[in-house]
Length: 189
Ligand code: 2AM
Image 1 (spheres, rainbow, N blue to C red):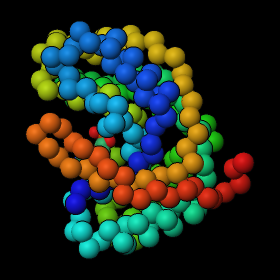
Image 2 (cartoon, protein in one colour; image 1 turned 90 degrees about the vertical axis):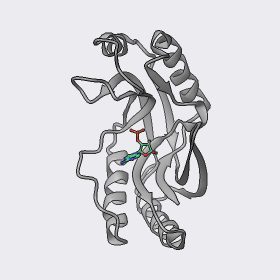
Image 3 (tube, rainbow, N blue to C red; image 1 turned 135 degrees about the vertical axis):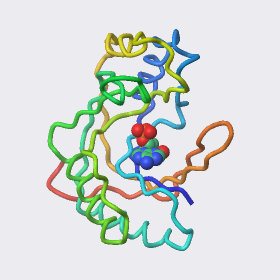
Image 4 (tube, rainbow, N blue to C red; image 1 turned 60 degrees about the vertical axis):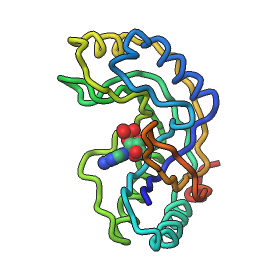
């Protein structure tokens, strides 16, 4: 099974992501937009794992949740990966002022490493993927349009993290939450 760890998004944030996707609809041919049920904030991508590891992963995730504090994200600016050259991903940025999101990601890196998952080499760059590029023949117009988007800031409390199974189908990835873990750490209210 293919697994990743994520925070679910509120309907309000999903609606704001949909609005931004509509504003960029001139690029519908270049971009495969994610659907509302595919939107999430990834904490850690685990990849393909044997089904027999599901219990280990659930237990490790519960340990992470026990030491991670709830937090509030602010979703706003729009950008592209990579930062220069041909665009591969269009995203909305995620900010979290207290440091609890970065700490939660750090707990993920260290606790999943204890059970055999490689640490991510790239710095954690929290984002919400809006779309992935099929083939960018837009000569920079897509990047310009993304950088010109003026999206309102929307906030959301995150109080639980989820283990998510991803099934790749010819129509795109289907995600199913297989367990939820309440964030119980720290001194957050
Ligand atoms: P992305 O949104 O930036 O593409 C499920 O695939 C989730 O895991 C996506 O949110 C994806 O991030 C993230 N992810 C991180 N590393 C990945 C990888 N190597 N392959 C696929 N997805 C990855």
